[in-house]
Amino acid sequence: MNKIPVILDCDPGIDDTMMLTLAFARPELDIRLVTTEAGNVSQDKTTYNALSFLTFIKQDVEVARGLDAPMFRTLEVAEEIHGEGGLGNVKWAEPTLQTSERSAVNAMRETLLASDEPVIIVATGPLTNVAALLLAHPEVKPKIKMISWMGGSAVGGNMSTTAEFNAYVDPHAVELVFRSGLPIVMSGLDVTHKAYITLDEMERLSKSGTSFAEKVAEMMKFYTFTQSQTPFHAPNFENQIRVHDVCAVAYLVAPELFQGGDFFVEVELEGRLTAGSTIVDYVGKTGKAPNVKVLHTVNREGFIELFFNAVDTIGKQLA
Image (cartoon, rainbow, N blue to C red; front, side, top):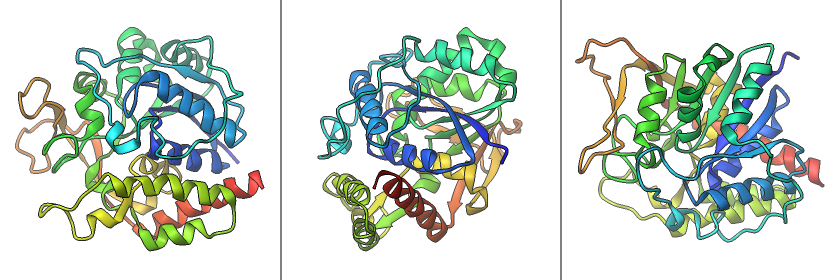
């Protein structure tokens, strides 16, 4: 099997750990590096959470600590969504993995330059580390095959009415990455809100036969305490669990589950009420060439099967 070389840049975070679950369950992925950044919670917490979760699932991989704050903005976190520690009410393991002596940017640069083939960067937090890498080391661009990012939205937001969280936290980083000329796939809220798990399905997962599945279900149910229905949400929004970040990896291993299109996308940087909004030119008004593949539809049943199979795979490996 020709494996796909991958760097995972994340801010664990409940759904980041589920992204890691899918990534490490898939034999076709060659995960060369995990990097962390501030986002869902502080950098100290995201790094600890990555080390803790990867220790629990018994993965020996380099984990490099990234930047502590966005490029030009004050960090805003989402503890009200992910819990004070970032992983709901669940504790995974006391880390035996150690943080790399290399910084995230240096580790990414050296990993890319050492690779014989282009590497895919999966980013599921603010794009601060990736933007810093491209700004400081443009020589790595030929070594990047694609950036698969969970973030942004064409319609609506979750941090504000127009901005998705990851884009809102560091819009300048998003703008820099989007202007890099690299192939980018954006799994925004338009698709991730359709990649939901119902409470009945989550109950089925919890009873699927492994203690890992039980722990995953317990952690993910924390989301249900932090979301509420509004007239502007889809029906049953408050009873659905969205595993946003999983989409960024799912697209790599099962692209047939997704639909999207190539559009010109730019980011509002300074708007008093709209900072972090990703402006997707899906009506073709700007006349500018597309720079991002924007996903908008997912085969939910196939997505759930893919994710549940990954949980089962990891669970059985740990049994």
